[in-house]
Length: 241
Length: 337
Image 1 (cartoon, rainbow over the protein chains, first blue to last red):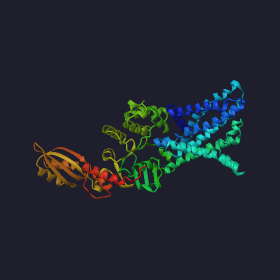
Image 2: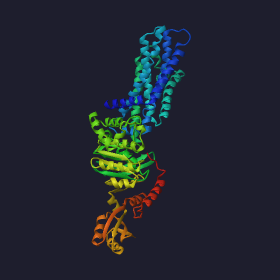
Image 3: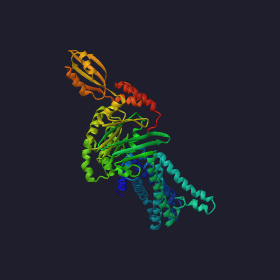
Image 4: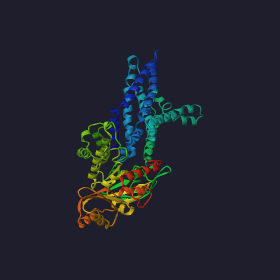
């Protein structure tokens, strides 16, 4: 755990020192603000809960985008700059490196997600929604972001070039979401099995409606676990190359 | 300390090193000499547990590198051919982080940091961002991260690469200061580096060990000829007669200087300095100076990398350099990790 925290500290410090983190965070907050004003609030009268639901639909998407962008530099950059040699010749386990980098990027992503809380709070000016609904929506967003980040981290472990890593992460996430659409043209019971793989279309929408289900949480938790495990195995396998 | 048994490493279908078999004792300073693509970096990466051999076994202090790499990593310091540096950190911050990675306590780090900054002559730039440093300074920060935890085994891949002449002298001095307290493995394709810093040399050629031993051992086995330059006062005939009697002397070149002085270039195998000076003094000649112009290593290197074990005379630096270039083009197609 001490080694993991060491990696977390260095990563967070690096986020604070380099502009890329700020640029991504600022862009996502700006996009969220614009989407809230144009799509969620709009120009026609709506129920407050509808405004919130529309905001969560959009913010879920931008959270996934932020997670993919945050993940690109995690391992690919270490490899392209040769700094992973320092980690790999130190008595630190590959799993600790992966988990440390994941936790640091998750902390940064969570900060960006939570900074957008002012947007749904604006609904209270002229309407009323339950804080429980907002909390459920944000829990869903954090879980969606955390699982996308883990998939991105896995993609980042596979390649040397950070831009290739981001492309690969986007492909992985898109393929998982496409499972939802494939399920629409597939017969039951296969359709429900295929649809289960879609992090956003299948598992985020209950949160959007204010519904917290254990099955969705279990899906996100297992995606994170499997992705981090796969990334660790990829790092371990590099000794064989 | 290190035992390498029949180690072979393939990158895809390309054999980077083949059937390496050697041992290194605690406290030794070993030089890996070879042309580009000879397998030096791969060998050092195998020894630093970064890579696993395709076949064979590496054990360090009795610990198997395949099963327990983390145990070995506790006592090694590694400088790869490109120093692993986080550009956005300052030198001191980076070295603290490197120390923490090697399980040092903050007390130990704060005590050791000034020492390391001093050894590597980095005190002036301790608070500067690594990204703003020149190549020479970065190389030194690379060394500093490798020695911060005072490792028993220090592995340096091309430590003087890209340094200017002054920095090379400083780096050599630094490595010399580290000898004794550390087991040091270093790789280079620069001959003078190995001659001046290492106890023992492993010559790699096309992934295999072409020869190993001390400079003197290699000279006696592979016909390396050293060149000595002697300045004396006396007759040319008498001097030549005295020196030709010595075992190992193959050729003499004389040059008459002014004021009755004579300069002799002696081409010989093995270390003849003492025998040579004794012979000249016994012959009643006034020995004024004696210096090694070129050690036997150059000709050994050229012979070995040409794939010959014979005694091709190639004692001049120019000859060695020309042959080195030849060898480089021959191995250009080989992959380098």
